Image 1 (cartoon, rainbow, N blue to C red):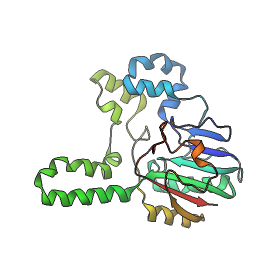
Image 2 (cartoon, rainbow, N blue to C red):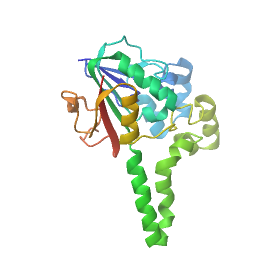
Image 3 (cartoon, one colour):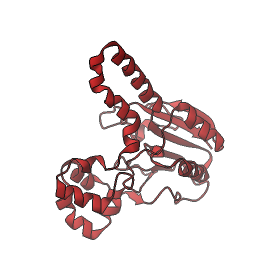
Image 4 (cartoon, one colour):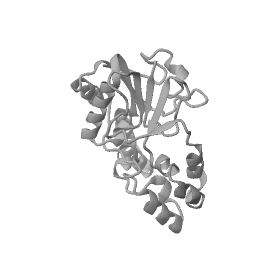
Length: 242
């Protein structure tokens, strides 16, 4: 079985069946010899650890352009918290690329932030604010879950840095959109299902992080942390067949 793990970041699999592909700014910078020399001066804390932890078994490729595999050549295409970072027209083209590289009856497994969950939490907290005005102090937290990553201008890790480091990071790595941090659209079980149907996928179903049509999916460890807990809590998991 051949599995593509697209937009993987550092969440990779070393199983022989898996090919990890990503286009993060950190990977592109890691390929740059000059940047590798000055990276310790610019990156610190968690971001330096993130930079150092990037595995070597990743193909660096811009997936918004295409998927570098032949048609009808893979059994499973998986991507987690990637689709929402693509403009809507590019997202549709990307999913058509997924469909192209899948074998007949191949499985596409999509993980995205669940807009439904965020909206429900917002409405529930709105009611709480009506009952207890003091709850309004934390209400922006619920608004942020809906909007913050769509309107963010500066990368979150950079915004809290000291002035010189902040300027250097913004100059070298760009703003939040250039780094792929911003959400360009959000999905729930209805609009994602409709999009997949429109693109010709079949047998679309909602899964959980523990369930899948993919044989022995749990063994790949892509939807869980090292303790076996959900890696991206509250996500929406959808699978579809070519």
